[in-house]
Length: 119
Image 1 (cartoon, rainbow, N blue to C red):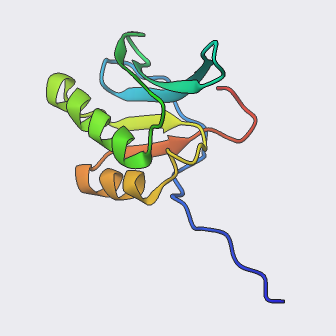
Image 2 (cartoon, rainbow, N blue to C red; image 1 turned 30 degrees about the vertical axis):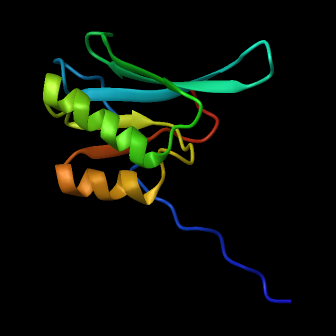
């Protein structure tokens, strides 16, 4: 049988990054997952400015797709302004083609942390 190839995902930079020296230079994105007492899970998307440590957005929902992440980032940019770089892990929502096309359209660099490294 012929083996199917994997789905292609966005490939941002993975080189070491410098610390930001002003607000709105670098934002970090991550998901927090919580289980309810009945077993259902919901996720929270956290958007943080790395310089000021200010939480720019907390978005809670049962399902957060790449399109939803892009929509929430657009809402933060309207309030706060555009960052120079966004840092995230390699989660499926954050490596989707919706995120890649958003980065190219807006002009924001996306940096993926190395797999297995929390920093």
